[in-house]
Amino acid sequence: MKFYIKTYGCQMNERDSEALSCLLEGDGHECVESEGLADLIVFNTCSVRDQAERKAIGKIGFMKKLKKTNPDLIVGVVGCMAQNHGDTLLKQLPVLDFVAGTDQLHRVPELVRSIANDRGRYSETGLDRVIRPELDGHRLGSVVAEVAVMRGCDQFCSYCIVPYVRGREKSRPISSIVEEVRRLVDGGTREVLLLGQNITAFGVAEARRDGVYTPEFSAFADLLSSVHAVDGLERIRFTSPHVHFMNDAFIRTVRDLPKVCKCFHIP
Image (cartoon, rainbow, N blue to C red; front, side, top):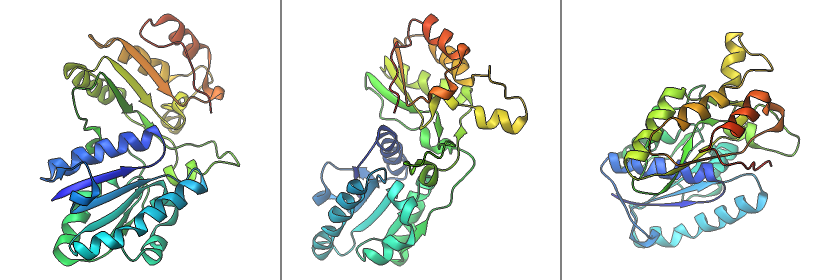
């Protein structure tokens, strides 16, 4: 099956789309460059701004025309808007075949197989406490690559929907992140952008759960040091940090590691 992914929103969505593309290709599907060539169209959506949702909903509505010429076309929505609205999207948009939330990307190949077999409509929006290892796939060969190291946010700022659509903070093991970076460097990558909705809180939720968290704790500093040790990597960037977790250990690590770029993007 030929597929096309349309991505809205942030760098994490871009990274999720890349990982989803690798999952679909691993399941035997072929990525194409335009929706008109596709048998499967997936919209990876954003809910941070109302305009982003309206834009995606309007675009999905246009798929009705494509379905008239290709009745077997499968149309799905993933990402934050999918998590935010769930089943409501299936009712609002009859053209949709499936909705998969932010922690259900790994199930998209399975959903596609089910729809191809029974033409059912599906909604999966459960939130997990772990980050699926299936989502570490990359298209190798790019000089710059994005690596998702954690997901979610526990800050619950009054203006922000992220904790509700991305869930609570959860971080990957440092060893698995380092292995992913090594594979990227072996494939030609020289700069990585480490991604997390609240990246300086990397490992904090796990440390609190294990009863070992202190204000001096910075698993993110440990992660930067471990990634810095990967031979062949030249630059490390990261986004987005929260100032509350910028402690002395973090500041010293950024200062002392030459591969870490000396700049912060603070929302």
